[in-house]
Image 1: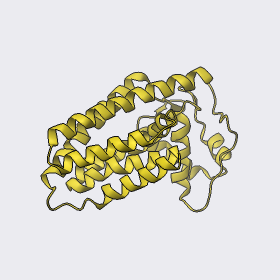
Image 2: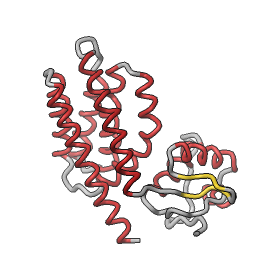
Image 3: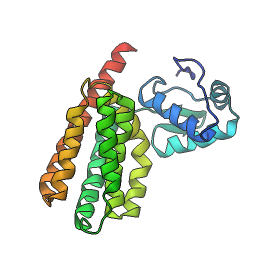
Image 4: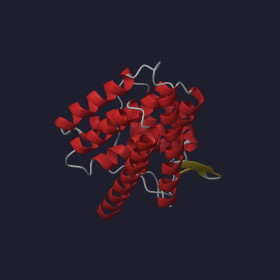
Length: 230
């Protein structure tokens, strides 16, 4: 088993965001991207020193990441788990179940719903695609999908999604990095929204499933690239 080692050295922490949120975000990114390999022993004191923070935010980060399934507590401490192919498959199966239901509920509330969050996300995706900003595009992409839970008015379903949304955020950053032209992905999302608003629910669900399969395939490609470079 390996000890904690960031390939980029110490991590910077700004005061603009909560320490715990920043620590968990950067650890999540490093674990999903295999910068911290599976089996790595995450020693609390070492992580604290690497980020230049006290141990409190680190303990909070460990608890959050364990809930997301990215680390696990053992008798000798906390260890990185990372994502295996089977984990990716399971996560995408779960996402499909949740998001199809979110689409169905958004469709059911279509007449009374406020679609502005979806439209704002689409506008941000178009802007970031034209700017070739893959990170900004990934954030807008995830906001688009998350907005359907809000439109559908399903708080409990949205709570379930929120548990795994940060992991998918990192996944999207990896998959979008594989794409030189982001505008076709934006167009796919626009078509999905338009189809749903036109009342063609089953067609929209089929489009969503095809979209998620493509995202899963791109993630597999991204993981292969990362592992070949390591």
